[in-house]
Image 1 (cartoon, rainbow, N blue to C red):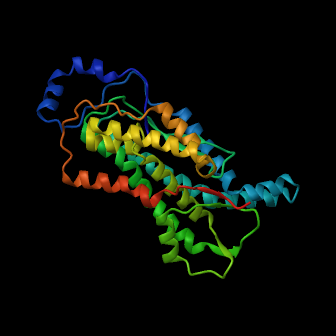
Image 2: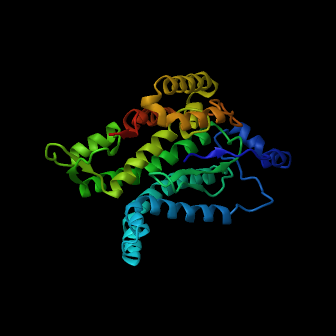
Image 3: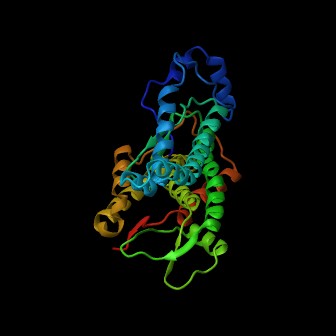
Length: 327
């Protein structure tokens, strides 16, 4: 999940006093990467590593939940655990690959621009269909300049989208049609997933539904995570991109989108109820984006076009109803 701005003291403030010549060069050349401020402590390693392992296990459990439940019912403990791990890995490995690509896109781009970034903090959620709530990266409160903000914000979603599309296509090829079970819970498909399914999967028999291979389900989850992060509000990746494109003009747009989404969920709770938690989180974070140290750097035509196209990905990558009850 998208990096957040850590509420911590900014080491670059003290750094600026002793590096005035370098900062003077930044004024003359605002596109110059901001040097990495010296830090009194190293990046935290133990907690990110622990959360990474915990998230691997929680996604493994989510993918092999059916087999693990059979073990709980006493149906062959050794064979059941082996089957659960095998089935779970079919989902966990693709999903964790997508999340790692996403977070490393942010991390490596931040390193390129000399912006301090922590190692990713993955968020395990064992009792959920996905087994995780993504990941976050703590970065400096004010990123060096407008171009750095844009590149750091957009690289994560684009990097994560590469394995996402690969697992969607490969997983759909491995998926099979089955008879629709009564009272089942289905997952809504975004337009892009529908197009890929139509191109990869042959039509099934009447009344049958496509049972997704775990890799395809991981790809579906990757589309969801990427699209959620591209919502142009606050500290999400989309919020970074929108602010880099419009600067302070992004604030009324983000505010309007957030409160429109809140009203939509409240007055159509039966349909959009699952989005309530996301809306509450965004309200807590706030719709506005803080300025960079230099908002006047030009992005250039290529970045502007790429930014708007990336934000438009939400239209084809996000489904209004991720979970559909067939009861």
